[in-house]
Amino acid sequence: MKNELIIKNLRLVVADTYEEMSQYTADQIHNDIKKKSNLLICTATGSTPTEAYDMLAKKYDDEPEVFSGVRFIKLDEWGGIPMDDPATCEVYLQEHLISPLQIEASRFVSWNSIPEDPNQEVKRISNMFADEGDIDLCILGMGVNGHLGFNEPAEFLRPSAHVAELTETTKKHTMAQKAEHGIQYGLTLGMNDIMRSKKILLLVNGSHKEKPFKEFLAGKITTKFPTTMLWMHPNVTVVCDKEVVPNIDKINSQK
Ligand code: GLP
Image (spheres, protein in one colour):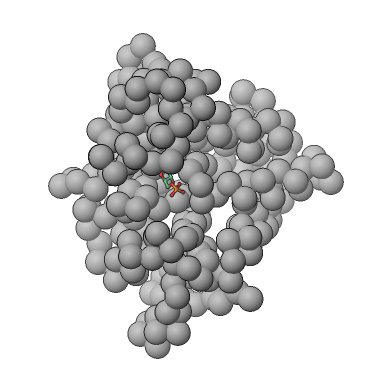
Protein backbone atom coordinates (compact mmCIF):
# COMPACT_ATOMS: atom_id res chain seq x y z
CA MET A 1 0.00 0.00 0.00
CA LYS A 2 1.25 3.47 -0.87
CA ASN A 3 1.69 6.23 1.68
CA GLU A 4 1.59 9.78 0.29
CA LEU A 5 2.53 12.92 2.10
CA ILE A 6 3.37 16.51 1.27
CA ILE A 7 6.48 17.98 2.85
CA LYS A 8 6.74 21.69 2.06
CA ASN A 9 6.30 21.82 -1.73
CA LEU A 10 7.37 18.23 -2.29
CA ARG A 11 5.19 15.16 -2.69
CA LEU A 12 6.62 12.01 -1.13
CA VAL A 13 5.17 8.69 -2.25
CA VAL A 14 6.34 5.71 -0.21
CA ALA A 15 5.48 2.34 -1.70
CA ASP A 16 5.74 -0.97 0.13
CA THR A 17 7.98 -2.54 -2.46
CA TYR A 18 10.29 -1.70 -5.33
CA GLU A 19 7.76 -3.25 -7.66
CA GLU A 20 4.98 -1.02 -6.38
CA MET A 21 7.06 2.14 -6.72
CA SER A 22 8.03 1.11 -10.25
CA GLN A 23 4.41 0.55 -11.19
CA TYR A 24 3.44 3.94 -9.79
CA THR A 25 6.27 5.57 -11.75
CA ALA A 26 5.43 3.81 -15.00
CA ASP A 27 1.77 4.86 -14.61
CA GLN A 28 2.77 8.48 -13.97
CA ILE A 29 4.97 8.59 -17.07
CA HIS A 30 2.28 6.90 -19.14
CA ASN A 31 -0.39 9.39 -17.99
CA ASP A 32 1.84 12.34 -18.77
CA ILE A 33 2.51 11.02 -22.27
CA LYS A 34 -1.22 10.58 -22.80
CA LYS A 35 -1.75 14.23 -21.83
CA LYS A 36 1.01 15.56 -24.14
CA SER A 37 1.89 13.34 -27.06
CA ASN A 38 5.29 14.94 -27.77
CA LEU A 39 6.37 14.98 -24.11
CA LEU A 40 10.13 15.53 -23.68
CA ILE A 41 11.32 13.08 -21.02
CA CYS A 42 14.78 13.22 -19.50
CA THR A 43 15.94 9.80 -18.41
CA ALA A 44 18.35 8.82 -15.69
CA THR A 45 19.82 5.33 -15.82
CA GLY A 46 21.26 3.11 -13.05
CA SER A 47 19.50 0.37 -11.16
CA THR A 48 16.65 2.47 -9.69
CA PRO A 49 14.43 3.20 -12.74
CA THR A 50 14.92 -0.12 -14.56
CA GLU A 51 11.70 -1.82 -13.50
CA ALA A 52 9.62 1.33 -14.12
CA TYR A 53 11.06 1.61 -17.64
CA ASP A 54 10.37 -2.08 -18.32
CA MET A 55 6.79 -1.69 -17.09
CA LEU A 56 6.35 1.36 -19.31
CA ALA A 57 7.74 -0.54 -22.29
CA LYS A 58 5.18 -3.30 -21.69
CA LYS A 59 2.40 -0.75 -22.25
CA TYR A 60 3.67 -0.26 -25.79
CA ASP A 61 2.26 -3.58 -27.01
CA ASP A 62 -1.32 -2.57 -26.17
CA GLU A 63 -1.11 1.09 -27.18
CA PRO A 64 1.79 1.78 -29.55
CA GLU A 65 0.09 4.96 -30.80
CA VAL A 66 0.45 6.59 -27.35
CA PHE A 67 4.23 6.58 -27.78
CA SER A 68 4.38 7.80 -31.39
CA GLY A 69 5.42 11.37 -30.55
CA VAL A 70 7.23 11.08 -27.21
CA ARG A 71 10.80 12.40 -27.11
CA PHE A 72 13.67 11.40 -24.83
CA ILE A 73 16.88 13.03 -23.69
CA LYS A 74 19.63 11.12 -21.95
CA LEU A 75 20.48 12.78 -18.63
CA ASP A 76 24.12 11.78 -18.52
CA GLU A 77 26.74 9.47 -19.94
CA TRP A 78 30.03 7.84 -19.00
CA GLY A 79 32.69 9.56 -21.08
CA GLY A 80 35.63 8.16 -23.02
CA ILE A 81 34.18 4.68 -23.62
CA PRO A 82 32.60 3.43 -26.87
CA MET A 83 28.84 3.75 -27.26
CA ASP A 84 28.45 -0.03 -27.27
CA ASP A 85 30.42 -0.59 -24.07
CA PRO A 86 28.06 -2.49 -21.70
CA ALA A 87 28.47 0.25 -19.10
CA THR A 88 27.04 3.11 -21.17
CA CYS A 89 23.75 4.79 -20.43
CA GLU A 90 23.20 4.42 -24.19
CA VAL A 91 23.20 0.61 -24.07
CA TYR A 92 20.94 0.73 -21.01
CA LEU A 93 18.41 3.11 -22.56
CA GLN A 94 18.39 1.35 -25.92
CA GLU A 95 17.56 -1.88 -24.13
CA HIS A 96 14.94 -0.61 -21.68
CA LEU A 97 13.21 2.24 -23.54
CA ILE A 98 14.40 3.35 -26.95
CA SER A 99 14.19 0.04 -28.74
CA PRO A 100 11.04 -1.38 -27.03
CA LEU A 101 9.18 1.91 -27.57
CA GLN A 102 10.46 2.16 -31.18
CA ILE A 103 11.89 5.64 -30.71
CA GLU A 104 13.66 6.76 -33.86
CA ALA A 105 16.88 8.83 -33.69
CA SER A 106 15.06 12.13 -34.29
CA ARG A 107 13.16 11.64 -31.02
CA PHE A 108 16.17 10.77 -28.88
CA VAL A 109 18.70 13.39 -27.84
CA SER A 110 21.67 11.31 -26.88
CA TRP A 111 25.13 12.11 -25.59
CA ASN A 112 27.92 10.57 -27.63
CA SER A 113 29.98 8.73 -25.02
CA ILE A 114 33.21 9.10 -26.97
CA PRO A 115 33.22 12.49 -28.68
CA GLU A 116 36.34 13.76 -30.40
CA ASP A 117 35.98 16.99 -28.45
CA PRO A 118 33.93 16.66 -25.23
CA ASN A 119 33.43 20.44 -25.06
CA GLN A 120 31.89 20.47 -28.53
CA GLU A 121 29.62 17.62 -27.46
CA VAL A 122 28.50 19.70 -24.47
CA LYS A 123 27.68 22.58 -26.86
CA ARG A 124 25.74 20.27 -29.15
CA ILE A 125 23.59 18.98 -26.28
CA SER A 126 23.09 22.47 -24.82
CA ASN A 127 21.94 23.76 -28.21
CA MET A 128 19.27 21.11 -28.44
CA PHE A 129 17.16 23.00 -25.88
CA ALA A 130 16.63 25.72 -28.50
CA ASP A 131 15.04 23.15 -30.83
CA GLU A 132 13.32 20.84 -28.37
CA GLY A 133 12.32 23.25 -25.59
CA ASP A 134 12.63 22.54 -21.89
CA ILE A 135 12.21 19.09 -20.39
CA ASP A 136 8.60 18.25 -19.56
CA LEU A 137 9.26 15.32 -17.28
CA CYS A 138 12.63 14.65 -15.69
CA ILE A 139 13.19 11.18 -14.22
CA LEU A 140 16.03 11.30 -11.74
CA GLY A 141 17.86 8.91 -9.47
CA MET A 142 19.85 9.97 -6.42
CA GLY A 143 23.47 8.88 -6.19
CA VAL A 144 24.57 7.51 -2.81
CA ASN A 145 26.70 10.64 -2.54
CA GLY A 146 23.73 12.86 -3.40
CA HIS A 147 24.63 13.44 -7.04
CA LEU A 148 22.04 14.11 -9.73
CA GLY A 149 23.14 12.90 -13.13
CA PHE A 150 26.86 13.66 -12.90
CA ASN A 151 26.35 16.86 -10.96
CA GLU A 152 28.67 15.72 -8.23
CA PRO A 153 28.94 17.14 -4.69
CA ALA A 154 31.26 20.17 -4.88
CA GLU A 155 31.93 23.73 -3.72
CA PHE A 156 29.82 24.93 -6.62
CA LEU A 157 27.49 23.38 -9.18
CA ARG A 158 27.25 24.05 -12.90
CA PRO A 159 24.03 25.31 -14.49
CA SER A 160 24.46 23.89 -17.99
CA ALA A 161 25.53 20.68 -19.66
CA HIS A 162 29.18 20.00 -18.95
CA VAL A 163 32.06 17.58 -18.73
CA ALA A 164 32.19 16.35 -15.15
CA GLU A 165 35.04 15.08 -13.07
CA LEU A 166 33.74 11.92 -11.43
CA THR A 167 34.12 11.31 -7.71
CA GLU A 168 35.68 8.09 -6.41
CA THR A 169 32.22 6.97 -5.18
CA THR A 170 30.71 7.42 -8.64
CA LYS A 171 33.58 5.57 -10.31
CA LYS A 172 32.53 2.54 -8.23
CA HIS A 173 28.89 2.70 -9.43
CA THR A 174 27.45 -0.65 -10.58
CA MET A 175 27.25 0.60 -14.18
CA ALA A 176 30.90 1.69 -14.17
CA GLN A 177 31.91 -1.73 -12.89
CA LYS A 178 30.64 -3.27 -16.12
CA ALA A 179 32.88 -1.07 -18.28
CA GLU A 180 35.23 -2.83 -20.69
CA HIS A 181 37.15 0.41 -21.30
CA GLY A 182 38.51 3.04 -18.93
CA ILE A 183 35.90 5.67 -18.03
CA GLN A 184 37.57 9.06 -18.16
CA TYR A 185 34.91 11.59 -17.26
CA GLY A 186 31.17 12.15 -17.11
CA LEU A 187 28.91 14.05 -19.50
CA THR A 188 25.81 15.51 -17.90
CA LEU A 189 23.02 18.03 -18.09
CA GLY A 190 23.56 20.81 -15.56
CA MET A 191 21.50 21.87 -12.57
CA ASN A 192 19.66 24.62 -14.41
CA ASP A 193 18.75 22.26 -17.25
CA ILE A 194 17.24 19.96 -14.62
CA MET A 195 15.58 22.71 -12.57
CA ARG A 196 13.86 24.15 -15.66
CA SER A 197 11.99 20.83 -16.08
CA LYS A 198 8.26 21.30 -15.72
CA LYS A 199 7.96 18.23 -13.53
CA ILE A 200 10.47 16.03 -11.74
CA LEU A 201 10.17 12.45 -10.52
CA LEU A 202 12.97 11.50 -8.16
CA LEU A 203 13.22 7.74 -7.62
CA VAL A 204 15.00 6.29 -4.61
CA ASN A 205 15.02 2.70 -3.39
CA GLY A 206 16.91 0.25 -1.23
CA SER A 207 18.36 0.27 2.28
CA HIS A 208 21.75 1.48 0.94
CA LYS A 209 20.05 4.83 0.23
CA GLU A 210 18.44 5.17 3.66
CA LYS A 211 21.21 7.31 5.13
CA PRO A 212 21.64 9.70 2.17
CA PHE A 213 17.88 9.99 1.83
CA LYS A 214 17.62 11.05 5.47
CA GLU A 215 20.14 13.76 4.66
CA PHE A 216 17.99 14.87 1.73
CA LEU A 217 14.85 14.94 3.86
CA ALA A 218 16.58 17.18 6.39
CA GLY A 219 15.79 19.91 3.87
CA LYS A 220 19.10 21.80 3.97
CA ILE A 221 20.05 22.98 0.51
CA THR A 222 23.72 22.49 -0.23
CA THR A 223 25.98 22.04 -3.25
CA LYS A 224 27.67 19.27 -1.25
CA PHE A 225 24.52 17.23 -1.82
CA PRO A 226 23.13 18.27 -5.21
CA THR A 227 19.81 16.42 -4.79
CA THR A 228 18.88 18.95 -2.08
CA MET A 229 18.53 21.58 -4.85
CA LEU A 230 15.22 19.90 -5.64
CA TRP A 231 13.75 21.58 -2.56
CA MET A 232 13.72 24.74 -4.72
CA HIS A 233 11.69 23.18 -7.53
CA PRO A 234 7.91 23.72 -7.53
CA ASN A 235 6.86 20.33 -8.91
CA VAL A 236 8.78 17.38 -7.51
CA THR A 237 7.42 13.97 -6.61
CA VAL A 238 9.79 11.66 -4.79
CA VAL A 239 8.87 8.02 -5.26
CA CYS A 240 10.56 5.55 -2.96
CA ASP A 241 10.16 2.19 -1.29
CA LYS A 242 9.86 1.48 2.44
CA GLU A 243 13.49 0.42 2.77
CA VAL A 244 14.52 4.03 2.18
CA VAL A 245 12.17 5.43 4.81
CA PRO A 246 11.59 2.72 7.42
CA ASN A 247 10.40 5.45 9.81
CA ILE A 248 7.69 6.95 7.68
CA ASP A 249 5.50 7.58 10.75
CA LYS A 250 8.21 9.70 12.33
CA ILE A 251 8.46 11.83 9.17
CA ASN A 252 4.71 12.18 9.16
CA SER A 253 4.70 13.65 12.64
CA GLN A 254 7.69 15.98 11.97
CA LYS A 255 6.53 17.57 8.75
C1 GLP B 1 24.47 7.07 -11.90
C2 GLP B 1 23.73 7.56 -13.17
C3 GLP B 1 22.60 8.47 -12.76
C4 GLP B 1 21.77 7.73 -11.74
C5 GLP B 1 22.52 7.60 -10.43
C6 GLP B 1 21.90 6.64 -9.43
O1 GLP B 1 25.69 7.68 -11.80
N1 GLP B 1 24.62 8.22 -14.05
O2 GLP B 1 21.83 8.79 -13.92
O3 GLP B 1 20.57 8.42 -11.51
O4 GLP B 1 23.88 7.29 -10.64
O5 GLP B 1 22.11 5.31 -9.79
P1 GLP B 1 21.42 4.06 -9.10
O6 GLP B 1 19.98 4.14 -9.47
O7 GLP B 1 22.06 2.84 -9.70
O8 GLP B 1 21.65 4.18 -7.65
